Image 1 (spheres, one colour):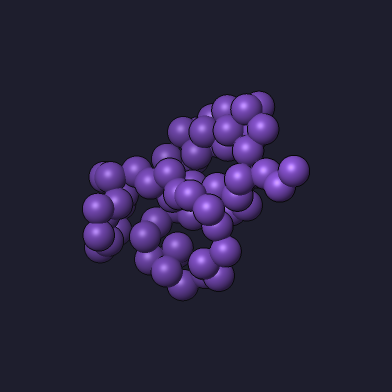
Image 2 (cartoon, helix red, strand yellow):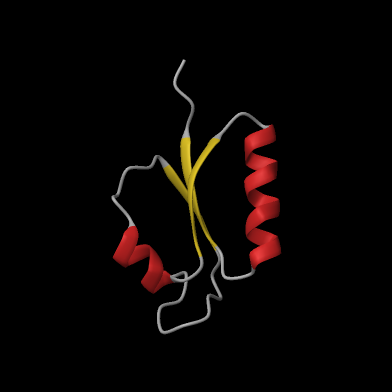
Length: 65
């Protein structure tokens, strides 16, 4: 059975790692961590099933945009 592929967009390092550990322990596959909206847009290959996004990201793009 294929695991659900999730990405995390979170600017706080420890929160991102905690989310990754939590999701992995529930059987999900975390394919990538991004620390800003700009980083996500530049580096993503759009190959994921779901995303967990911090609303209050640092930088010019917030999590709602």
